[in-house]
Amino acid sequence: MRLRDSLKISFITLRTNKMRSALTMLGIIIGVGSVILMMSIGRSAQNLIIGQIQSLGSNSIYIEPGSFDPKGGFGMEMALEEMTIKTLKLKDMEAIEKDPLVDMAYPMVYGTARAVYQNNDEKITFIGTTPEAYIMDDWHAVIGRDINEEEVKSMARVATLGYKIAGDLFGEEDPIGKTIRIKKTSFKVIGVMEERGMEMFQNYDEYVYIPVTTAQKLLLGIDHLNAITVRAINEDTVDRLMENIRFILRDTHNIYNPEGDLSRDDFKVMSQVEASNMMAQITGILTAFLSSIAAIALIVGGIGIMNIMLVSVTERTKEIGLRKAVGARNKDILNQFLLESITLTLIGGIIGFLGGTSISFIVAIVLSSVLNISWGFAVPVSAVVLAFGVAAIVGLVFGIYPAKKAAKLNPIEALRHE
Image (tube, rainbow, N blue to C red):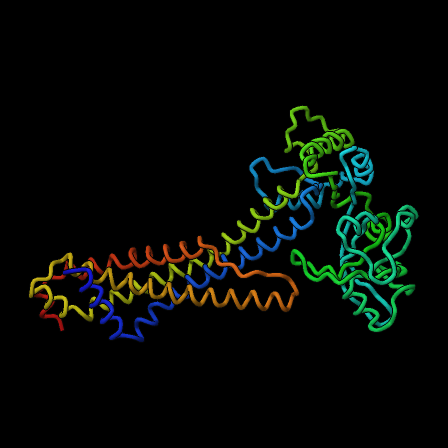
């Protein structure tokens, strides 16, 4: 029997049992749609984060506590290191700033708390830093002013508010000169930041900037830093400056490491490119994890197809016997049932692809408008290949057993079947 004839019979059979065919395809539709949706969201998130890191400038260098995993992993152990290692200090940044390849640097400590003004109470993220942060991030107060160096040195209780927090706490009232309380400590409001919105899944308009010394001593009770950001004088000096920073920090941290083994350091020094690659790896792992969970639906769908095909073999036993009696070979019967199984999965795959793509598109529109971020719509080619490839394999694998069972039927016994 020619392939075209087999395909024609397959479509006629599936069309004859529309409801059963639709229910059989449901698992494949959900599986393919879920894989497309997860991989699309993962790729969009990856593009957004990497774009925002790259927008900070190609001559930026980031220093965080913790050592590089020699295996290249970024798991829970690494996150715990960043929280528990407390060796990164302000004196480190001051030592780094003396390097002639450094243009500017700023430290950072952070935490969450409630900010209170009269009867208003809002959750905030407070950032302890220095005036250089405003310059390097190109983000300034539009009302009032930024924090100055003198306020950092004197551990002043002053704050610049994010745009949203200022509105939530003060409404139409002018906040400049007013006092808010954070962790029972009073802060004089000296500025309101320019509206910025969501970046890297954080709402910058809910941030409150205070001097780093004030945040360390009065709010957190610590003397270490969460991070240091350094800007090289130009892009060509980034690699040399990173090496210089490693030598400086090994010296200030008393780390003997003549071989330059990064896993022995208690700090990480990353360029913008390395930070982008790290975020790409993290989002890639998360996307693969979520997609693998979604792919389980494909397996469930395949088992459903096998069950329905077995029922179909039983229902069509007499038909199989009749076809064998008029000359159909075992191979023709086998191909017939395999084609029906693969056709079901491919049609389900196409519907799942269209559904997953449509939902991804809607998600992109909703996130862009609700969170005020540039969430792009992206469906990676690998997602399409993976979804259809797995769907075709599922159809083939789970269709083989029913097809073999149909092909092995004895024509005389099949004709007697009631």
